[in-house]
Length: 256
Ligand code: SIN
Ligand code: MN
Image 1 (cartoon, rainbow, N blue to C red):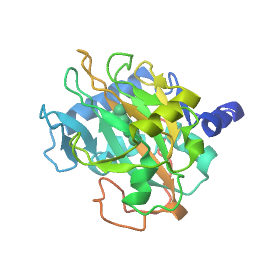
Image 2 (image 1 turned 180 degrees about the vertical axis):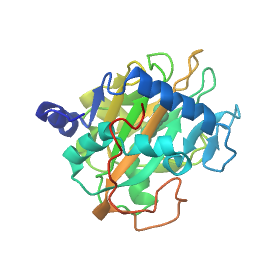
Image 3 (image 1 turned 30 degrees about the vertical axis):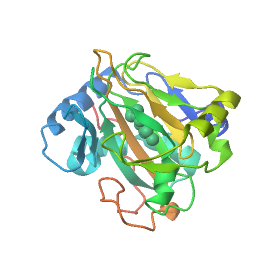
């Protein structure tokens, strides 16, 4: 549950880490069962793909379900986050990015802090994005791409794109991506369902469309230090939670 010193160094140095077998098969099975249930909700917190009408991202999950609330605060996320950012963290966002077989669309090159500063007025790029794969993720079904070390370039230029997909996103232009990739390369994050990822707020990332016959669902929680909370309130609470009290861990057995 806890990261080693080397793993913490890896997050600080590369901006991300992949944690294979972080959640067990039974935990994944129980989360997936709940995922199928919440997909029947009819709510504005589900953002629908422009072309297929499928759910692109189901948001505000800790507000919608006890199981997702337990997952959000689970020690397997919370302990590493505390090691990296300290004890006082609030839930900024939870979601499942679905990326359905054949139709799941692109997430353009971006870094999350562009949105967190531009839309929400968070002061520093301290939020941590923690994922767990709910399907096996491979080279074909739209894995995340990271540009390692791109967080070290600070806040690179970005622009709000409201056209490409149904989700408005502050994106990084091709010239900047080319120069970052020339210096640092690209990696893609694969693994079996249950694999976790942690990445920092100004790491440049994205993912291609899913033209494979395999779904690619990933749960994501963003935890932010309480003293770095949003200062602008233009987005609904399913996009940026407005309970800034430090969270407490759920039980280690809460998903069994
Ligand atoms: C994705 O689901 O591929 C993108 C996720 C993210 O930007 O956090
Ligand atoms: Mn992102």
